[in-house]
Length: 136
Image: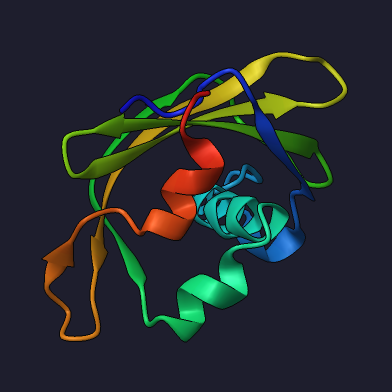
């Protein structure tokens, strides 16, 4: 069943000094931290984070496709917009990172993820997550 891609979940952040590289720009690896935090904030917004943790569900990224478009500088405010999509046993997170002041895209990330059970074996996407995301 397809997941609802019409809703966009947003996460706001500000670039900090310790995230800068020697050129004064946010290090590219930090973009991935931004999207990782956005994924957990999405689960929190859905009211599922505590339940996923209690059930020992783990989310593991198996592929990350990143397109860097613009540099981010100190104190730049960003918004991470996230949409979800189910693909077979995978959950795809489509992240769009925007500079709040300019409205311009700084990066696009698609993270293909799999869920692990208590024995760290791949499992289906938890039903409690699907019930919030399946289209009516």
